[in-house]
Image: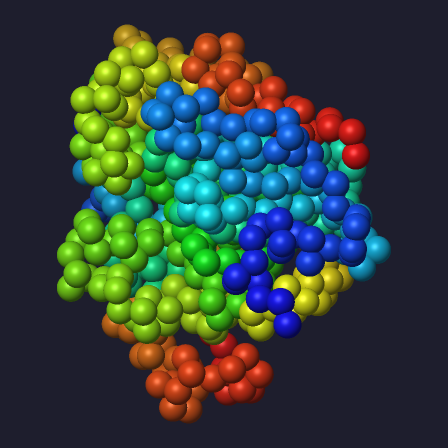
Length: 234
Length: 292
């Protein structure tokens, strides 16, 4: 689904959203609630400029619209791969963006992520995956790396990876895998405006992803092991 | 002088903390290894490449995590990540003087990529939660494998990064960029280019790392003590707006620079070509008051 269709379906009452290159931002209404939407299109690689731009928009909402919910609709093929971005410290820009998202969260803004097209690695980490809760459309793609590239790097034969990915959600791309592991809270299907309203009405909780992953059978160790370390006898 | 770079993760922890004070949580005797590596017939490790525990540093209670680069490049999988997240959550209960992260990681472990990516996000969330609770998180970066991928983001969420000349910090490693974009974009075998792009000296000049230290465990220990004393975790709006302005100035001023040498020259550092060859003391003198 493209961003314009997504926005129309999320905000049937004509959202006020401006597009500028691969970036967009604006305000839509969910029920009686104004929602600030911030996003990217065209599987935008996220480099220093775009990371900072998204961060600036989040800071603006915190500064000028206390409490307004934020919807991150980021379409990204991952971090921009370039020597220039590394030279400028792109990891610091990604961290800055994550800190801004967390600031919004701590200041009482709901921050919801929706993966509507593609989400990959570093671009995902600093944006929608760092929301309070992240959702995805069923047709969206979420991955770290495709299986052929993974096979080359891990030296594990592709047929073996393909076979294992039939039963294990742990490495193969796919929104269902991320849902089973708790990274994605749920899939948005049908009436997207209703899905958004329901997400906004969810109780504010901490990081529930390891508990979700355990309950859904996709990530059985993360929660109990973190708990064991937290409470181990000193 | 004990090299931090050459030491194992366990050696670093032992040398960093007050002697005999380290207590490990979920030690290798508990045989907590990755089931996902087992499923792929890939050798595992009973600590999954990370050591977590508590100890004392100059008498201060601290929690410590150390990644072992010799096991899968310190890459983060489900078990590895959960140990680190659990340690950070423990800080909320115990309120130590600081959490020390001895990073050495290529980021997500591809053999369990989805679990690793989510685990890094959970670590990120835990780091900012610990800092928001007023507990400093200090990163030490001087291992053989550097700090890349999602762990490069985690590192920059901390209060301060202490780095040695040998330390490296970035998001996409040089090999990844070369493989994807070609050798003309980034020649990962050009050591000098790699070091002046992602190495400790450039990270210090740029302000990404707070302190540049000698490659000695004792030097990291001294710097960590000072960092704990200096840390005042602040993730408020004003602090982030100031960071936002700094990062904007960096793009405006250095965005067109093709090489670290251009940035160093622009900062008014005399004879930037000689910086890589200087020892730490001479380097610090050469760049004093010239950092971005």
